[in-house]
Amino acid sequence: MRVLFIACLLACLPLAARADIGVEGARHLLSRAGFGANPAQIAVYAPLSREAAVDKLLAGVSTRPTTPPPAWVDQPFERPGQAGLSEDQKKALQQERNQHALELRCWWLAEMRATPSPLTEKMTLFWHNHFVSSLEKVRSPQMMYQQNLLLRRYALGNFGELLHAVARDPAMMRYLDTAINRKGEPNENFAREVMELFTLGEGHYSEQDIREAARAFTGWGITQDEQFTERPRLRDNDDKTIFGQRGNFNGDDVIDLLLRQPSTAGFIAAKLWKNFVSPTPDPTAIRKLADGFRRGNYELKPLLRAMLLTPQFWHSQGALVKSPVELTIGTLVTFDLMPADWRAIAGLNRQLGQDLFNPPNVKGWPGGEAWINSATLLTRKQFLDRISHDAAPARDAFALPDGGMDEMRGRQARINRLAANKQPMRLQPDEWSAIYGARSAADSARLLLALPPATPLPANLSGAQAIAPLLLDPVYQVH
Image (cartoon, rainbow, N blue to C red; front, side):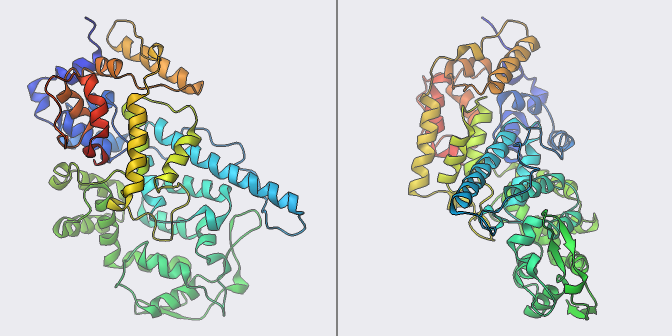
């Protein structure tokens, strides 16, 4: 009987290696720090210690996407509402904008599925829901694409540099009205949100701080070709008093003042904790993480490393509800599936409440239990039911020659060809369980669930037979 290399890694690890994070620990780390966990990826991390696994994960992060963007991303954006257009022209431009918006969502979903650095995309998504902007108001897919590149570039870099860059980002400036902020008519939107939602949190600033900061951001604008610019004639050059300090502050000065406030480090650490560990931050742990974050000049990678090495992280299995993107992309990753049309996945995520590039408001998606209601739970189950029962013949995608690593390379080459040709790969329970050594229901449960199934499985089920009930088990909805 043919035994695949990955199956050996998963089933035949020495006892000393199993004393480290093991299959369950690897699945937990990769699921939280990315989107799902392919058993082949699990096999790589299972023999490692916690520290070695986290360091390996962080060493592989990237700052650029690997998926080619849509052809229009560098083209000028033609506004449907510009003067001198006929109704037919306006309608055509609006249709083009909508098409570009959909292509942008599909591009990012494809990158999440294909990326060699899932943590980068997970952090990019985190910042997208922290520094919220929305196509609904920005109305330029090109701007939103550039913002997405910005968030990825700084995703695990320096938070201070990210904050400065976001403040000058044209999409953010349009979304929170910095672009129309001028002397004598200060707009407080960005000044308020940069304190309440981006850095300090409620209760750590005054209304006067907001008013004075709004004055400091006057004079910033966007050019016709959607680039940041400074307009000295529109800038308020009088002194402002912010956080008890007085001076002729500009926007960058305000950002620096925010970074000096002790509350900023704690606010960011707590929000990352809710995203990676549990909905309830541990006050002692957050205080320690925040102190290190601030002393380390707001470097994000050391903060995330320290967080992922806390005992609380390693004992938090099942504490977080999967977001729609985590559920859909994670399932595709876990089973090596590629959709025939990314538009279907984009539409599904929208139906489930997570429409990429269109968070519901400036506070973003609330997450957690808010992802689950009677309508979304039914749609989630329908998606998973389709996955588990859609077993049309596609065995060529998994047919492998004998020979250890050669088998894995041959299999990956077939996967890559199917992906390039936009052909779907359908879940084959027998093939999947054979390739990854999931002989029993318990093997499949270890690879797929964060906790024991809520509905116990019959003892006589094989690994392949267990896949469908495990996908439909309530525990599959959490990680």
